[in-house]
Image 1: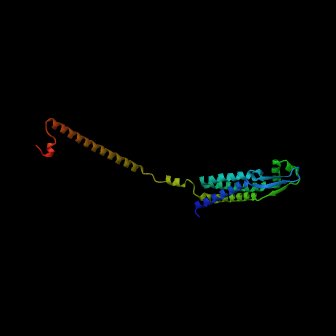
Image 2: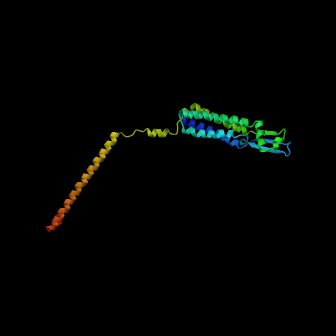
Length: 223
């Protein structure tokens, strides 16, 4: 696999991991049922309701993905390490968000009726696992960037090759200028000579007319 293709696949991993985490953050992760309260209620809590850390780490991973193409060498390796940290942060924050204590605290902040129930029922679905999966994929992409990103090509490679082309030698430029100047001087001299010859012919024509001669007689052969 070429370094450029390897970089592209790693970028897809980072984008997929961040996308999964952001998608899961807007879905319902847990539902709290308070049946023993004055009025039975059921609160649905999304990933953002249980904590904004998974979504924030996913957004940071997307920002690191943009920097992955704009940098090279050790800087890119450092960005890969940060991306791996962001992925680990998504995994940890998603796991901590579905703990019973955290779910009950988030539900109690939305409704006081939940706190009146001594034994509320908590139903956790699998969307938090989607977020964990996204964090793992993002961390894998970051580790690949850390280990192999230094050998990948950067955005400025083609511009560096274009700027490295050999410029014309100063002597050649001066010779071309001298040749151009000589050509221009020769053209101007030829134009000047032609102008002088034309002026002489016109003067001779007018003088022959003053003497009463027919200037066309010489061409036709008439006396």
